[in-house]
Length: 412
Image (cartoon, rainbow, N blue to C red; front, side, top):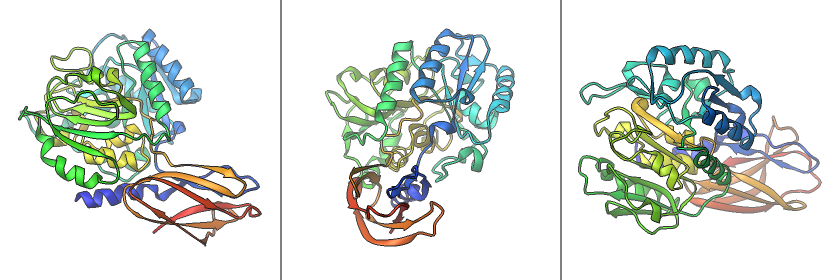
């Protein structure tokens, strides 16, 4: 798929509607473009004190009801589960998961692996060795890769997962706080794509120029030929390829930032011979990714930066944007705050009949407003037409004060 089509795909993510509550004044029906808290199930290991503490904080921070929590019991403190033990736990998880749940947040750092698979992939697909490589071969593909769906469980029969990971509670609390703070914040930051001297790990750099072109006007993108980024205070995205990323302590990450390094064992969170992906979260990123088994340097086993950024810009959550950017995720573990959604559309009434709408668009275009007495329609177009630019948009408009009904956006 061309990068132009990827841009158009990201723009089309705002096709489904989320109802605003009814009132006496017109209500704007916002685009439903990302996972909602009620669609997320939180998994906790009751035998792990840190897991309990993280889960309790996350449940409160994201206002998750008790019905959205699964409480397991198994011996903590291990980097990996055996396939047999995992399959027993997964049967318990599936039995406790209502059909409307679309994704999992996992409240621990260990275990992060199941046999040759990552824990997040095993939760999504079940333990299946087709998702593991042999002699640097390819693996089974994810149906979620580059998918427009907002409902992976309903439509693809899989639930993506992400670990709320950190070395201690203070780190995970800071991660969760960043994710919550990111929501609808429309951060102004830069995407840094680093082409390094490490030829084996620098394979994503071949597409960096096209990525910068595709993202022009959506995010500022800098393609740098350097082994490390230093002294920047506006890091929104950081993608590179080295075994050890230096000088992370000189950077400031925006709330909601995504960052990762292409290397063999970044996903071995607690015992890697290379840099653990946890270092990104400790430095201030909100989500990251790394592989737990030798992936070789197949591009398909690592995030495609263009996709991750475009889905994020379209209003996806961190878990959705990251998962949709990896074609073969069986050996990769996703870590971070899954519900972080910096570019979620938002609106407010600034004065009676006066409205302000914030949204990101991956392409230029126009939006026409349509009105109906019922949220089910029929909707009749209003004469008001709003112009969209690529990137952040702040749209100001008026609606009749005497009308009590619903307004939705028609994308042109």
